[in-house]
Length: 595
Image 1 (cartoon, rainbow, N blue to C red):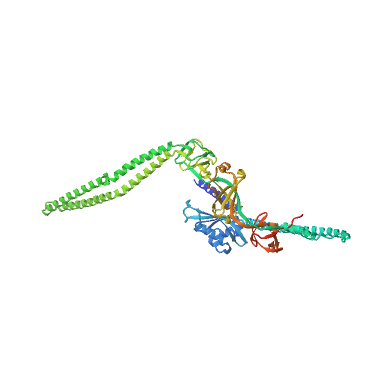
Image 2 (tube, rainbow, N blue to C red):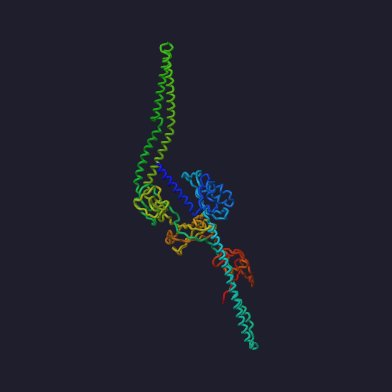
């Protein structure tokens, strides 16, 4: 016996040692707290991030270690919020400085119930898992910065192209001037013979002005549409689960996964032999409960009450006999016929009979009162038996499962599939099922939905109700129009990845042509229209010049070109939105073109 105990203890120590080794080698920092707030686990990754040694932390309370760290307030508050106010699992990205510089931490705080009951907060410990994503955020910031620099460089490059084009034009004008001067010298001999035509200079001036006229552009208002783009897969508009009403077996499958069905089409039939047995048992319980209820409803005439009444009558008769005997002995004792002891015995018997009568009356009263609770209990048992019988009767009637809506038959999710089967396996005749098992899911194809991912810079632009345009290579030429139905308010945090937010768009209704073109699971692109300006001022990027890092546009004021400062809004590959500085009807100058 001692050997077995030692072996068990050895295995327990081995398991504990393995657990500690695993915690030490984890890339994520892990800190666990007991319900009283004492730190019990502080692995190597936690030491590396916080700069604290495990020996100095384990055994102390969390508040004692971290509460005095002014620059780690957000980290500490996240743990406290999850313990006292938050859900069982809380995920958040926080900023903290443990003394080695600011860090961005992706945190996951989970409450753990020591008794196995996750609903009991008082006995819940806490597991804190976090990782340093500072480098990821810095890389993201660097990417955004490079994007802005590239856009600025593009504008500068366009300005340089315009300058080079202008210089080339001036060179060509100078070359033409030299050629013209030579031509004039050659014609000096004929100056007295030929006269210069008076309109020649006007034609030369017109020719010189034509290039400038070709570079003028009249500003006009046009529609500006700004979108946020993401990708995803087409899914049904909604998914309706088909669950088993009983425990039993599948008798016949009429619709396999992927089949299109109409409302009320037969999906499968169930073998309800076991349910019939349960139905008979429930019927027997109902009969017994009905009989019991009928018995206790006439409680005053029940066997127990009758027995208590008879006992009371016997006790009262016995008391009357004892009273007569006591009176007789008292008379005989006075005349000296009987001794004193006999008279005393008669008195004791009378007292005993009095107590018997009192006990019988109390028992009768208690039995009568107990009838009220017996009636209530019997009525509840009868009602429960009736409900169970009705449910089983309904289950027998529902042994034929039919489609609740028109759509496509889909596999249930792996977490909700029926017992004993793999998530991708088809349902077959004879499969064992349990009551409540999700057998199929009907995808409503009246419309479609798409779930996309956006980062933290784009999610703030999207709102529920925004116009959504869905397109894809698989249904090229068809654009599905819908709206945004849901925008998540909490980021999804995955290991070694930046947080992202989920956006769901729905197309409530499809035309017949659209329904023929699309298939569930097709890859698609979702464009959410976050801004639509019907009359925005947009000009080519080439028209914008940068002077001291400020944008300017050359505007014709009469015959003179004036540099006007402008405010630039959204930009595309070719055009830029002008928020301020230009109005519709202004004439601007673009860089010249080579002849």
